[in-house]
Image 1 (tube, rainbow, N blue to C red):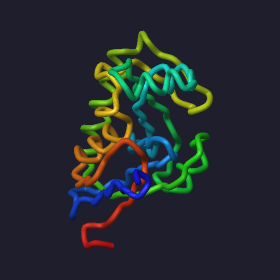
Image 2 (image 1 turned 90 degrees about the horizontal axis):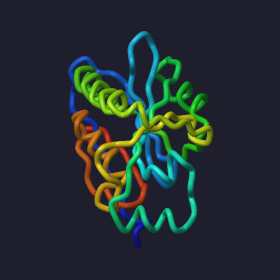
Image 3 (image 1 turned 90 degrees about the vertical axis):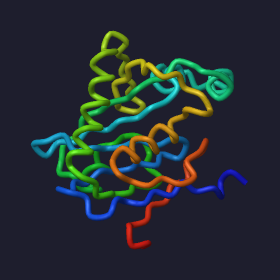
Image 4 (image 1 turned 45 degrees about the horizontal axis):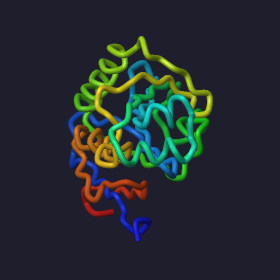
Length: 182
């Protein structure tokens, strides 16, 4: 039943100074790639700290993450440009089930990147690198739970970019439509 519930993202209508951002559906969670100037890109992810950053992927860790507020992680990884789907696919080690390119306003993208980089910088003392995800992780100040999971956080990031998001939930099953319904 849950697999049929899609999270639908509607791209913003006529964003000012449009830039490409990339929503990556990895199967169990999602990540977001934003432009970072000079043709570079930055990938961000959110998840349970023990599961994602420390790679403690046993059933106990997974159950704890779903049942209660556990420590969360913010992942960050720099990519080379250009801001194109093939360049993103070529550099992200983690499997990508689906990759969606969206056009959003430059100011919104820069604002979200600054916010996420601020959280990352403020928590740099907790930095852990994961070769599996090829991301550096720091502790995120908001605990991870079923009500504040990776998909809901990524949906919130997309909303801050001017996208409309419908049906975000526990699992990943993303679809993207353009403002004209395509």
